[in-house]
Amino acid sequence: MSFPLSRVLVVMGCCVAACAQPAAPPSGTIAGIVLDGGSNAPILRAVVTLSTVEARPQDAVAWTDASGRFAFGYLPPGRYELRVTKNGYQPAVYGAETPRRPPDTVQLAAGEVRGDIVFRLQLVITILGLVVGEGGEPLPGISITAMRFGWQRQKRRLLPGPSVRSDTAGRYRLTGLAPGRYAIVASQLGGPPIQRQSESVAGQPQRPYSYGPQYYPGTDRAESATLLPVEPGHEYAQIDFVLSARPIPSVQGRIVPPPGVSMFEQLSVNVSREDLANRMSMGAGVSQPDLAFRYDQLQPGSYLFVVQGTAGGRLYRGMQLVEIPPEGVPDLAIPLQPSIDLSGSVSVEGPDAAKSPASFVSLVPGENIQFNPPQLRATINKDGTFKIADVPPGIWDINAGPVPAGGYIKSMRLGDQDVLTEEMVIQSSTQASLKIVISTRAAAIQGDVSRNGKTVRALVVLAPEPPWRHVLSFYRIVSADANGHFEIKNATPGAYQLYAFDELDRESMQDPEFLKPFEPAAVPVTLLEGENPPQKLLVISLAESGAAQ
Image (cartoon, rainbow, N blue to C red):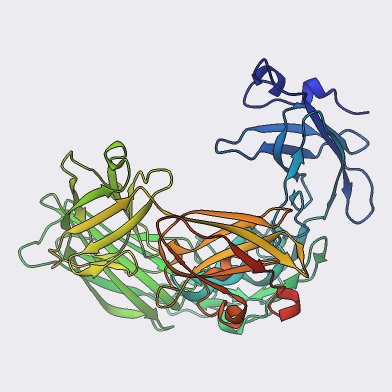
């Protein structure tokens, strides 16, 4: 039994029929069924979302009935996207057989009835196992995290994914993974130290122990971990861990203040583990006036120490990457450097520039660190100038805007340095001003994708030519529709290569080596401001090339 169409179609608080203009063309219908991809049985109460493909998209929601059917009625002609979610199943998007493939849209004509939509959902991927100590005792509260190799700022490293904690019996059940290859790591997060000494000396405190991180199938080094391949609808059991209790090394340190500063109104030390298996940031108290701190909870490994303090209304920061050995660190010293006031200007050029003034400039930490003070953001004055106070030393990403529709950020320069294509590093000695130029007229290009003379859906990548291949803000990834047509807007003018892939992991774009094997199949283009000549692309099959994972 289907739900009445007048009841299931609700878009932003009103039905599409009520929102339509009086002279609207005949309305249409989109309907279909949701099935279990393994058993082919209908799925009850799956959530189906229909979205318009517009500059300001609207959504409607329906729930499948006992026959797995859904329907949306009173639809004006146009293009629509469909997606389905259901607890226990992988989300699905119309037209995309896997998350790596481009989605499709439903093109609905006036008065048309489309009742042929079929979704086959795959069960979620599940990893389960047991966490015990060396004596076989179950370990509750241990964090189990699935990690994938990815790219951060052009560096390959393990990135954290879904996680879960073991229960009182030491068992865990990890879900919510996309297909791929994962390193599974077990670690004790924030738990109290344990006592494991079988002998002790009178008058001396027992040395605390804790469970160090362990990567499946039994290594404490990420580079030695076995990557577990997982596929949709599969369950992977007996991914077990036997954790060893290890002595906790002691880290004793002191903060080295800048000349003329001896006391701070606020002072904090935070540390985070660099291998990303443990994303918890741990703080430590700092005693004054000796400015000493101590950590007794850290396992051996590589850590980033970040010290921040305020004195006389000025912010100070110090950072240091420290390798902690099993015997600990007795004399860590972290010097503090003062923040600066970063001044600059923002100008807007191009057609109707006067109608699109910029209003703000903000900075975001470019390093994977915790930043406690208020957001670094400045309002742009009428003459285009700005000043951001108390910018600590470090790497910073820049945001300015709003960028007008159809526009782009043309340049960013810190003195003589191009910080649009290079990292902006602020030091306590930095005195240069930051000059930003926004243009109202970006580059745009469109074209068509084909295979064996037939138009096909694809993911189209606009990639900058070397030496700008590392500038991720220059990339554009769009989907070509069922007719093989694509449009790219708001691109930065310059020299590029165009690629069309039948499937793509978008994170691959951060790998500086990913596109090299496909360069002979790329179409070189030089984009100018405004519309550029259309291009014809041939689709590249990752499966045939052996690059698909």
